[in-house]
Image 1 (cartoon, helix red, strand yellow):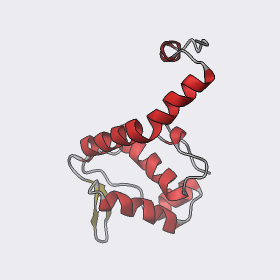
Image 2 (cartoon, helix red, strand yellow):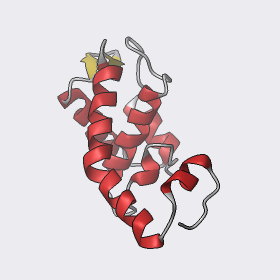
Image 3 (tube, one colour):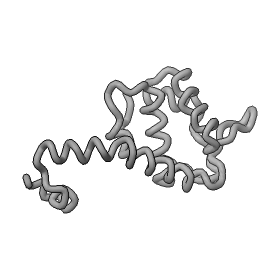
Image 4 (tube, one colour):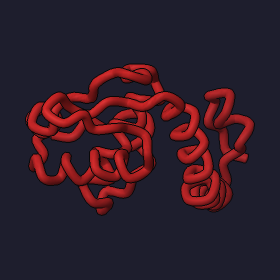
Length: 126
């Protein structure tokens, strides 16, 4: 079963599993669970932990490699590269502001919610 952490709460249920896994890994990196130089779990270990197909995990990992956030050391594993956190945070902010925020803002307006009340936790209707 996939764990939906802070970043993945915004993922659609119909999002491909590899994108959900990518979001889980991204959130772990941004929370500091994996720092520059740290090794990520093996494909098999992450697949077992989340009940996913190893090929799906490999696809998620490949996307991090393609984006330059991790490097593969043959025979050893995959490691977070220096500067990955800052670059990943920038990319995720942009993704949130252009992809998620407009839909969230529109949904808040549609439901007649007060954005200030949402921010302070009172959840009152506008």
